[in-house]
Image 1 (cartoon, rainbow, N blue to C red):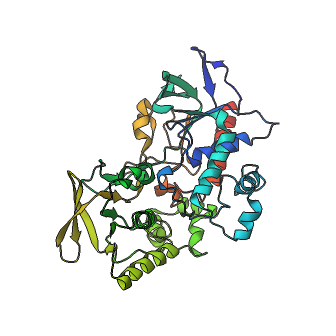
Image 2 (cartoon, one colour):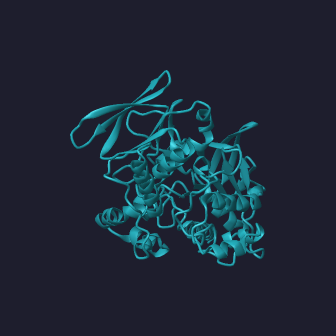
Image 3 (cartoon, helix red, strand yellow):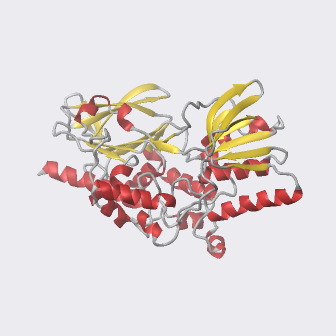
Amino acid sequence: MTATSAPHGPDETPVHDLIGVGFGPSNLALAVALAEEPATTAQPSAVFFERQPQFGWHRGMLFDDATMQVSFLKDLVTLRNPTSRFSFLCYLQARDRLIDFINAKNLFPLRIEFHDYLEWAAAQVDHLVRYRHEVVELRTAEVGRYVDVVTRGPNGTTTHRARNVVFATGLETNLPDGVVPSRRVWHNRDILHRIDELRTTKPSRFVVVGAGQSAAEVTSFLHREFPDAEICAVFSRYGYSPADDSPFANRIFDPAAVEDFFDAPPETKKMLHAYHANTNYSVVDAELIEDLYARRYREKILGKERLRMLNVSRLVDATETPDGVRATIELLTNGEKMSLDADLLVCATGYKPADPSALLGNLAPHCQRDGDGRLVVGRDYRIATAATLEAGLYLQGGTEHTHGITSSLLSNTAIRVDEILRSVRDAELATQR
């Protein structure tokens, strides 16, 4: 790639080789890969824009006992470069915990520890990131040769020009139909940010909606932290389902599986997703399931049942009251409804990929879509565009329909950023011929 921040074009606007939209783990891994480019090659000009004031990844769910669900070896770099100075093992060495971690004999670190690793890596590429800057729009520049990226920051609106843009805008919260966040209705991502609001009020009841890992973790946390409160877990299944993390099932996360999925016909894609959804969606670690069941059973013995499982049920309404929220729960077996007055309703109902379409501006007509209105994405994660747009647009996330279940997961992040950088290099070489 051509290293440049020099003026280019009639208006003498500096041109970056690459601009990253968002700076979560995916674009952090991309920044790290750029930092590891050999010194003997031309160093690409890159900048990443992040609206948060500092690096953060699901901070509201960093319970002190929650563990990662992927191996530490699937960090930012190891699958791409096992000798990288940005690896989780190098982080442990820097924190003087390498021997302690080895002695623990565990592939799955605490989530709060892995977050500290991500912060440690982000600090080493801090010069590439502009925090408190939100990307608000993209525009074509010089007849589609470049992309102008418009950002809003502390000093107002600024325009930056790039040959390539990589979207890693993360996930948006998913709430039950008709439910909106409020003073006493939260998505689980806010739990640690806001829970102190309730600690002085002596809450008597919490309602937690959801059947996945986050829902079980929130239920466990509230049950532990508020020993005088009742915790009502609401989910449509008969019980929490265990995640399938067996060795053969986990091959769905292998880099080769992305290749297989991408080349498969639509009916096979649908089949694979159905077969292996229980590796990631609405499933819970078996150890946590057993712990919650043990608490429930112990309470039955003691005659003080605070942990209630409202299974085969769903939330149909949530109404604010002067003192909290009234949740209406429907029993799916017979349609019977019951009302629960609670101090807090937590919707641990997952996320959906953030759609970059709103940011595309006048680039949108150049981007191809399939019959379902989804962006057409190549194997290299590049959005298919009309020939009138030469600049490259890439997605990290929102490609589950094309690349499979690992689209927004850590499992293939290191490999994915390598494939994107290779595509960027190949595209530039092609224009120079």
